[in-house]
Length: 206
Figure (cartoon, rainbow, N blue to C red):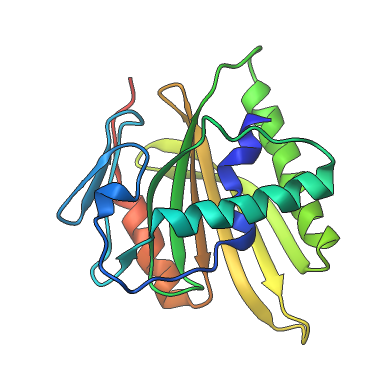
């Protein structure tokens, strides 16, 4: 289930590090020059917002494992994440986080990707329920720089019924890769900062 590995960070990525780090050591592919991250493999570049910190790779991997464990427990399936690559991830704090990933994909038949994506949405929602987390979700499409992305929106509630966290997932096939972006936020200002950065991305499709 290739699509499942794209969004492991969705479930438990609530980490933050203020220590200065080398951003190029925190990614599996691409490079960071100044405030610009570029992935030639995907054909994507994005400007990291001013004052936002690049997330450390060890924190991302630890969070991935927690998410993987939760999905496997919920679905009863063993997930293969060996080909998953972490692209750029940055954050304001533990609740406002931008994370991106890629994974090579070869469709066995036309439309397989979209079919798998719908299944993934259902699995993610069910995983929240299985963990005793109250959540609402919806899916759709959005155009960014002339490219159509799948979108999946989730609102997570605390025990008191108040909104704890909002999440937006974007995904599409890019140059033979399953490209995904997760945006976690708890306020409109930081949401706007991350979405504006993503919508100003530059893409080059082969």
